[in-house]
Length: 261
Image 1 (cartoon, rainbow, N blue to C red):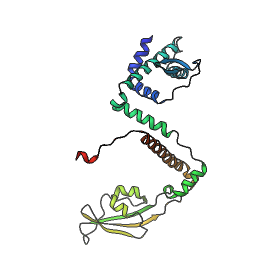
Image 2 (cartoon, one colour; image 1 turned 30 degrees about the vertical axis):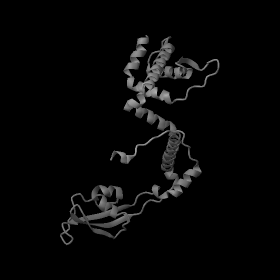
Image 3 (cartoon, rainbow, N blue to C red; image 1 turned 120 degrees about the vertical axis):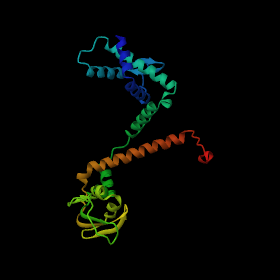
Image 4 (spheres, one colour; image 1 turned 180 degrees about the horizontal axis):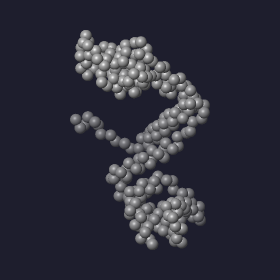
């Protein structure tokens, strides 16, 4: 029954909003003069045969029973209903007035922009690896002893939160020592002592008992991380370039910040 399609549309209103907004961003199908690609037109906007086929496939996956004979009609009816709601939402400026809808549109636009970011060649990945080799090296590990006192000449004791007597990365040591002491250890070598350093109202010393050098970077073992970094930078560049073009084409008027002071 047609009532089923409408009930499903109402029950899935939130999901329907996201799907409808995706429809705003999808390119309109190119039609032949005979209209072979059009299953329907709603106020001039095309619902393509491919759209109906995808809807039928989704229904088929979600149903344990064979599709009824009128499944095509029901699927097309639902797409028409969604298109009508979508057009009405755009007409009343819903993407601007509803925060959730606005965010969905923005995120969908960002996804569509960064999807076009170029995939790197092997040579480009290797060049990035050589340029940023330090990013892919394993972190050095240190075994330390931490003591503190009320004054520089006072009796030193080991804090209850002292790190265990084993090699730890600087990131792990930060959880024990805090940012001030762990950052002071960045270039420390075995046999050295950091301190006295005043922090949190006490005086601190950290003895470096052992240091394990960072693991040298290897391209093949780091390939996935290199590709992820390349992709992140390419997507960021693609988005910024797209926004630059939109800014150039837009009529933007800013209020002088000092005007409100």
